[in-house]
Length: 155
Length: 226
Image 1 (cartoon, rainbow over the protein chains, first blue to last red):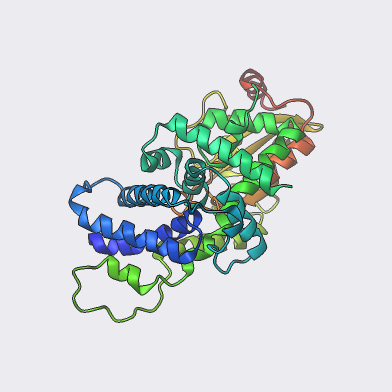
Image 2 (tube, chains in turn yellow, orange):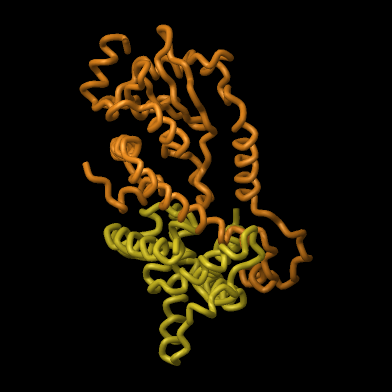
C-alpha cells in the first residue's frame, strides 16, 4: 500500500485518539490534520520496515504537546467540565460523557498513556515507543492514571 | 505471592508472561476479593474502549483525507464512507464469537464430544500438560489445576474457547466452556491470553482448598489424576 493510502487507513484511529486528548471534535480533527501534514512533509524520516502507525501517533503526540504548551501559555487550560464535547454518538452516551470528563481531569502525561493502551489498544512496548519513554515510566503513569479513573468513575 | 494492582492491570492488558498469568489465576481463583479487584480493572478497560469506539465508524472529514493526499491535484470523488477493513474483520470475529457462545462444542469439534467428554487434543493436554513445563505452541493450554469435592479439575484455553474440565469416570468432562473474546479495544491484538472471568468464577465455586502448585500437580498426574 502506498504511504498516503496507509495514512488514510490510519485516520479513524488517529481521530479517535485525538478525541480522547482534546476537548471537542473540531480541535481533535485539527490535531489530526496537523499530524497528517507533518507526517507527509517528513515522510523521508520514516524508516521502511518500522511501524507507520507508531510513527504517526508519535508525530501527533508531539503536535499535541506543542498545542498543550501554547494553550497553557495563553491561560486557556481545558476544564474538566467542558470535556465531553468530544464524544460522538455512542451506545451509552452517559457513560461516554462520564469517562471523557474523568479523562480530562488526569494530568496530560497519564491521560495519553491511558489513551494509548486502553483506547487505542497498543501494547506496553508500542505505547512506550510512541511516547518515547522507558517502559517503567509508562507503567507508573498507567497505574496512577487508572487508579485515579476508577476512583472517579466508581463513585 | 502478593498480587499488585499493577499485575492485575497487566493481566487484563494481556501483558503478563504465561507463568505470571498462571500465578494471577491461582491467586484470583482462591480469593474472591482479588477476583472483584480484577473485575474492576477489566471493567475499566472495557468501558474505556467502548466510550470512544464510535469515532472509528464516523465518516472521516474530507479535509483530512485531502491532507493525506497533497499530490492529488484533482480531488477524489467522494467515496462511500468506508468502514476500515480491520474494523470489519473485528466485527466478523465478534459475531463468530457471539454465535459460538451458546454452543458447547466449539470450533474444533473433535475436542469436546457431545457428552462433553474431552477428546483428542484437549484430552491429551488435560492428561499431560504440566504448569511446570508449558507446552510450546500447543493448541490447548492448561491453566489451573485444583481439587473439587469429586476430584481434580483443570482450566484450559485454546484460541477460541476456554473452559473447565473435571475428572470423571476415568476421563475429563468439560464442565463449562466459553468463547474467548478478544480485548474490546485492541484493534490488531486479537488473541485473548487471559482466562475469562466466567472460568475463574466457576473454578472458585468448585475449588476445595488452594490450586495445586507445580509439585502437587506433577504428583497428581503421576497417579493418573485419581
